[in-house]
Length: 214
Image (cartoon, rainbow, N blue to C red; front, side, top):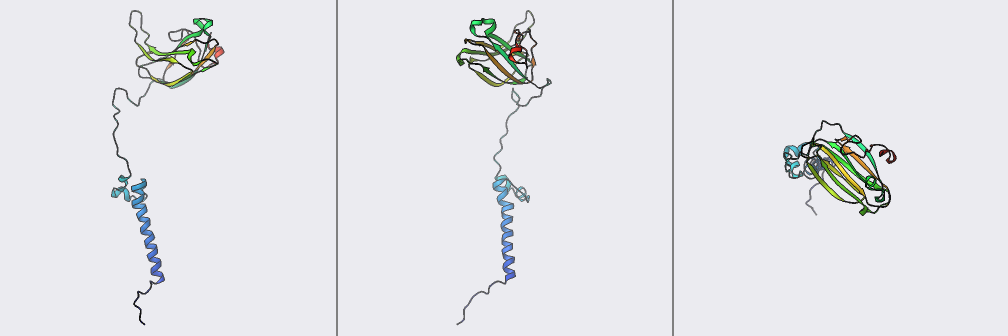
C-alpha cells in the first residue's frame, strides 16, 4: 500500500530552521517588545521605528516662570547650626520662661528648620510664635510677617524670607519645670550676634544649653 507523505527535513535543514526561528524571536523581543513595553532599545530599532514612544508617558510642561521661582541661587554661603535655648518654668518669671530667637535673612533666602523640646512638659504648655520683621531705622515703618502660632513639642519646615530682616520664633514655657529648645537650622542666613535685635537674650549657637544663655 502506497502512503502519500512529505519526506522529513534533513537534520541540517531542521537545525537551520530552528536557529532561524530563535533569531527571529530574539529580534522581535529586542526590536519591538523591549522598546514598546519596557523603554529599552538595545538595537536602536525602537527609536527609528517610533515604537519606543509607545512606552513613554505623555509629557506636560510645568510653568516655572511664576512669581516664586523653584530654583534659586544665593550669594550668601550655605551654613548649618544647632542652637540650644534654655527656658525656665513660668514660676521663674517671664525673663527666664520667654525668649525670642531670630536669624538675619535677605529677601528670597531660604532656610530649613527643625526644633524639639528636651525635657518633661505637657505639649499645651509650650507656646511658639513663628514670625519675622524688618529692622527699620528710627522714624521708618516696620514690615511684619506672621507664619504660625501654636502649642507643641516640635516643628519642622522651611522658610523663604519675604523681605530683608530677621526671622524666627518667640518661645514661651508655661510649665513648671525648665526645658531646652533644640533648634537645627540649615540654609542661607546669618546668626544675629548676642544682644542685637532678634537675639536680645544673648543666645550663643553651637554650644551646649548650659553655655548658650548668659
